[in-house]
Each structure stands twice: as C-alpha cells, then as structure tokens.
Image (cartoon, rainbow, N blue to C red):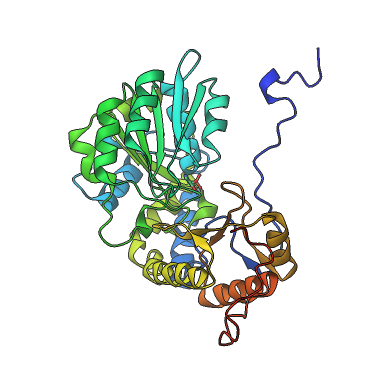
Length: 375
Ligand SMILES: *Cc1c(COP(=O)(O)O)cnc(C)c1O
C-alpha cells in the first residue's frame, strides 16, 4: 500500500494555499483591512476572560445564545431555530455536503465559482458538476436549469456576490433555481454586506422556499476573519439535519463568546463597509480608465484583466510590495479592497508594471504601452 495510505483522489493534491506572504500591502484574501477598535478589543478580552473561568466544561453545543444573536442581526423575521453556525462558513458548507451530499449524489455550481466548493464535494465523497457562466459572469438561467434538470443535484452552490467575479444574483434567478432544484440551494452571501444599493439579499426569499439556504460569515464585512465564525439561515429542519453531522461541541466556548461580543459591536465593526464600497467603486472606475476589463462588483474585491501573462503582472506587483490574487479565469487577476493608502499603492504599482501613465500624473499620451494586455 502507498504510504501514507491516502485516498486515491487525494494523492498529489496541494492543500488550499493562497500565499501568506509578509508584504506591506496585502490585498489577496478579501479581508476587511480595518482592525477592531480598542473598545472592541477590550470587550472581547473581558468576554474571553469570563468564559475562561468555565473552560473545564464543554461549550453549549446547540449555540443557543449565539443563534439568537445571529437571528437578530439577520432580521428578515429569521428565528434562532433557522440559524446554524460553525468555524467559518467553510465548515458550514462542509457540513451541508456531509449531510445532503455523499456517495451517489451530486453537487452543482457554475464557473467561475468559489475554488473551495469542489474540495468540499470531494471531501464529502459527492459528485461534482460545474456548469458555466456568461461572458459577463452572470448566470444563464436556461443553462443553469438544464444542468440541474440533467444532474438532479442534492446541493446547488451559488455564491452571491460570486467569488472571484463579484457578480450578485438577482432574486428571480434564486427563485427559479430553488424551484428547479430537487435538493438544497445554497446562496453563499459571504460578501452580502458589500452589495451595491438596490441588490437584495436572498434572505427575503427564505419564507417562500423551504430548500433555500443563505450562508453568511463574520470573516469579511465583519472584520473578524481570525475568529472563524460562519453561519446560515434556512428552514429549521435543515438546521436540525446539520446537527447530525457536526462534531460534538464543534464551536468552542471562546469562539462563541468572541462572536457574541462582536455582534454587540456590529454597528462599529461594519462601520467601514460604506467606505470600502466607495473605494471599490473608485477602483472599478480607475481600472476601466486604464482601458482594462473589469467585472461589475458587489463585493469587496474586483476582478480585472485581461493579461497575456497574468503571473508576470502579479509578480511585478509583489516585487513592489503589493500582494493580490492570481485567481479566476485565465488572464484575470483579483484585488481585494483595502484602505485608501493601500489602494493608492496598488494603483501606483500596477501603473508601473503595465507602463501606464500612472495615477499621480495626468495622461500625457493617447496610447500607453499595452505590454501585458490582450486585445
Ligand atoms: C471568504 C469566503 C467564504 C468565507 O469563508 P470563512 O470560512 O467564513 O472564512 C465563504 N464563501 C466564499 C465564496 C468566500 O469567498
């Protein structure tokens, strides 16, 4: 037997690895660039000290207080028995695949889509089928319905806003796919709080669709990626089913205390979301002014291109102290939205790498060098 005795489909597979490099400007994993305030730090420290007194005991495995606080935060009439939480929405999603996927079953998404979905499917020994998106990264509903009708998936995974493209799904699309799908339809709203005005949340559709699951996280808008807290809203029977596959006491007392404290400071932790949305829209405008292709974004990142040699562009930025993400379809790159200073550093570095006139100077020529660009 090969050693270690890894499952055949895991042999030679690289673990998830967005590079964690120590560079001055980190715009690669869609984090909120603003750390918690000293007031939040002090309250979290107090809450952790308090819970430490009872760390000899197992935590509340039903997360009662936390589910109530998350239901309150979500609004839309969501009740605590419609909420479930785990260590990041990555764990929530894995639990969904463990409960509703499995051998002989299929999960479906539409590319480009979140790179982790096929890994959850693989880990839960679930078949993986991926349809496609249109040129502008919107969903072709006719195609999506056809894929669902053909493969009868027990799980459909729809990031909205989509990662890595930033594209949000209109509610009609969610309704159509909920009606077409025989199993659960997960609308992954990891970036939901960054939606542009007028883009509704799928939470509004929960009462009408018993198979709809809306997934959220505290890792992005909430500025709490390090705490690892993801959650979902769905019908109570879906939450109950997930309790069957979760590990005993999966969510530590410390995590529950940190998340509860953070939720009490929601207004403050989310206080920079509007700044980040404005910075995102400015970034889209600037990139388009440089004659680059840019996907519309409802998230805190922007997908732009296209480059014949995107790795060289990525590398050039890195050499200038700016780390972005080499992801998405061939020729595209993704930049997370940082502080105004970080975005200025990004623009300067990109202008240098592409030989553009540069953000700080007026354009002096009509035909900037189009070194890396495809037409
Ligand atoms: C970042 C992200 C998540 C969140 O992951 P966590 O485990 O909650 O940190 C979920 N879905 C998508 C599409 C993401 O980009």
